[in-house]
Length: 196
Length: 196
DNA sequence: GTCTATACGACGATAGAC
DNA sequence: GTCTATCGTCGTATAGAC
Image (cartoon, rainbow over all chains, first blue to last red; front, side):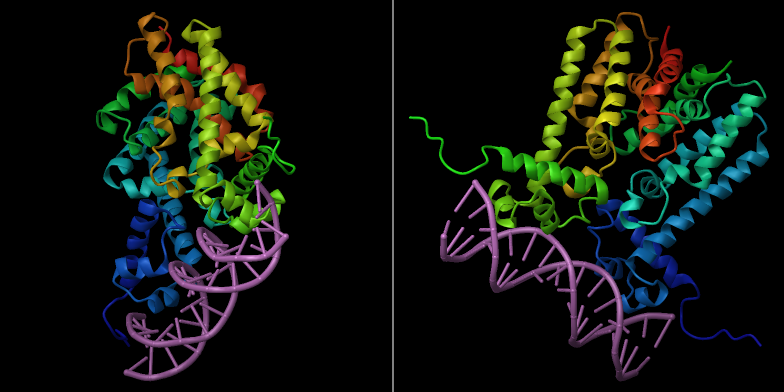
């Protein structure tokens, strides 16, 4: 019954392609990356790429969806493990900083790519589920009284905006120390901005 | 002596080209815009474009430099007209919001374009002079005692990060009310975050 | 599923007349 | 300074053998 069908790679080729693509897209951008580049870097032929993905845009879309799903999973985990807005926010910032330091390409692709330029039908990333979930955390903090009553968008941008801009600053090489060394300062600041 | 040389446009053609280019770049991105598109949209022939600019990248660079210079001028004006960090920051946020509402394409090109993808030798926009000047305002606020002693980058991102993320949210269509209607709320929040 | 070779179109850029 | 016509290149995508 077991049909260990044939050759080498189970779902491995896809992973190779996606990994190489992530590097290339973050390094030089979607439009500066040709399918030939992807083939060379992933040690796979052009034909294979077009076998696994509909087209170049399809590769980008797969990358994008993986990323969103992963963030979703991580945030769901945070929601489960922490109950207050206070703790959740700390956990979210820690998560974002940790991804930035350990897998910078992921974060770069998430925050830096202009997805809509190459995925025309995608909504802006801030409308995506993970960002939605972050706003939900803020909302619950407001009803529980931890956070001042105020416009939800304002509160969210104040709470997470600083951290996110620290991340982009870090990726731009503007920071003197490591990103994670700033976490306490930034956390205190943004908490002051919105706490009751 | 006066050689009012010839035809129609003094420096007008350039302006036409740049204006059309700004629209196209913000609407569909640098890479999705061909020089043919620019020619059609600006009512100018391809030949003229290449006469006035070295190449496609040259057009983008001119646009970018204009923008940086303009921001520089506006911030210098603010520096002249206001003396406290408190007032300067208010003026900066008002300026940014006003540009966003009145000339959204300018702001979109400034905050949304991935300049480094098509201007390879340009430094990230956050390293540019205007952003430098904004950080300078924060620094002076710290030495004058208006702002808590803390890391300069943290203070700057907290002060302006929220406003900037409100702008991108506005451009993404996430805001229910007009951007300018949020100004007081956002200003109060970020001031709480850093004031002594 | 993986590969090589190739078709085809689009785009950046130039030449050269006016 | 402005135009049209054209060239060469490069990149996406396909065909078809293995």
